[in-house]
Image 1 (cartoon, rainbow, N blue to C red):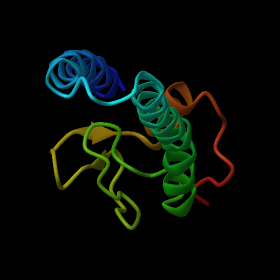
Image 2: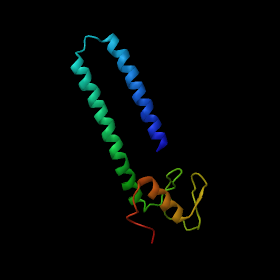
Image 3: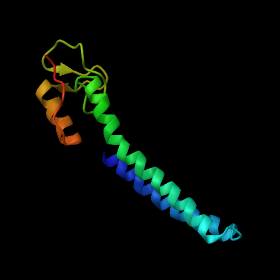
Length: 114
């Protein structure tokens, strides 16, 4: 989540810097066209950020909330307790995984391991 915010800040700063550079060279663009273009890009970024959480929850539900919180590797089918992620090697209990995803998504799991 922190990585996504850092990328967003970098994109915003780069967008402002690029817009100044382009505006200085392409002054022939009408100001209202430039503002409309900036608003369209801003709206696209906002929609993508809003749908990011929904995609995460759908992915978690599809994998029964058993994705490694560190690397998001699918941990379904592992029978050991604690679960050892084959991708990153971290040990997790099922309760730790559920708690971690609950804190990240701010929601309770809709499907749990049976």
